[in-house]
Amino acid sequence: MFHRLVRTMDLYDGLRMPVRVGRDELLLIHEDGQTWLVQRRCPHADFPLDRCTVSGSQLRCPGHGMEFSLRTGQCLTASYRLEQYRIDYDGPWLGVEA
Image (cartoon, rainbow, N blue to C red; front, side, top):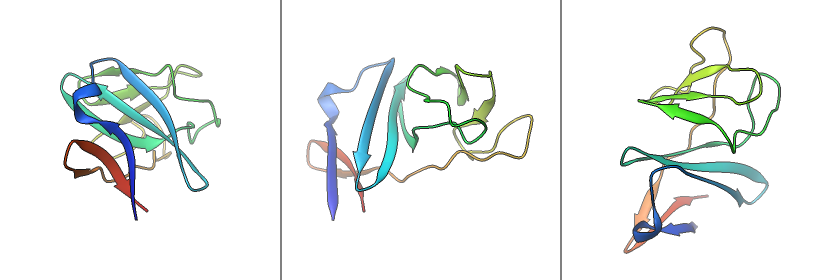
């Protein structure tokens, strides 16, 4: 089932949009023209990533500064992994299949 999250025309750089799909808490991020969908809480200390910073394709947790690759989900300094979700499109809508 396709879950609509946001219209593509409503995306803007700096977007950090928490979303719930079923029981999963996710975070939609749009920065430098790229969009990612990841788990909403840091796998290191369960800190919300809503105020994360993104530089290039790296996400930095605002809680403890852990950095993750948005390409792989892998933490750059430890063995933690950020769960990523595939983004799908349905006409003007961006969403996820669940």
